[in-house]
Image (cartoon, rainbow, N blue to C red; front, side, top):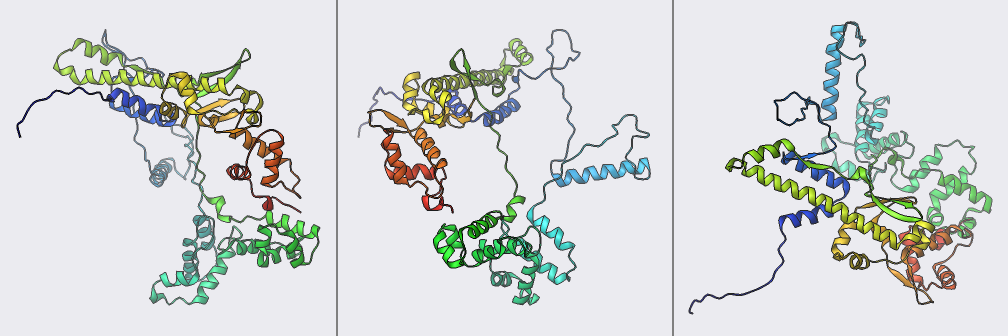
Length: 479
């Protein structure tokens, strides 16, 4: 085959590094953006924050002020930090004498020590501390400790005693009766109900710990031991017949059972706190709803003047790396500014479309899709999707993610459309106002909405009801 040269013209889209960075910053949340900016600030000396006040420093004439900070290494591990503080206090006590931590003889130090908050005890720590105070033989205490290690985060023993016995070394020769006694010891510890193997056993342990004269205790014990599935299904007719009691007695027993804690170990579970920083604040200005950027969420970046002056006076080969970092800093500042401008434009467009929501609440939410905002602002639909993900809006009605204002539509008899969010709000209102002795079924809710001109199928009502975590009609029935 003869080799030849050919010229072809074609078009293709190339994502420049600047465009790639702009897209990546757009999809980050505010917290993730701040973490990303901290990385840029650490890597690029020409980039700095505007909100950092620079202390006055004596310098040669013509030089820029440079912030000077001094950091003292600190222990990051809590155990290491606690050991270090204990060691420091012990050494200080030797100098002061008699173990005193007063300020006598200390002219250059503060009289009080920093208070380090103690870590919350876990369920395991709480139980082991009680076991250590129990007058049990070492072997029995060890078996109780083994059972404590097998508990889940709710305080349940999910493994059988035979499985736990099989995992122990054979040379210990642990008998099944020993583990049964150790389980009884565990179930006598606080919180009451810990060490249960089923929810029924957990509730039974808590009822048995009550005083015998407690009202409805006997009926409640029969319910959790024999008829707990009937109570869960709210089949009160069969439950009354099985217990041989009237409505008032059954209602009192139900209230007593509902006052118990089916997850006794959950109070010791660590609570994960999630912080949300609103990107946009919505206010009503002269009868017009306006979306404004949250100044606390906007990082203020600038070019470091000292390094910029050095680069300006050194245009040679030595300044090649600084020139590249200067360009990267300018790109980042521009992309961050463009990110917030895009968020503000999209947020304002959403506010304009959903102004009735801010006036009347969820029932006035109108149908809205991403394409409608994209066509209005001249943006791509994927760009609007990135802007509305993990971006939050602070309104007089609460803080909402921007995606909350988008939803599908349901047709009405008049030929219009109703938002799915508005329908869920109507379902919530109907269920909240229903007679608990005769709760509304999905078909009945569909019929009521049809009378208001909103055509919704029963299966659609069931889907919206489940998304609101509203139980089915038989589980909402009460005595």
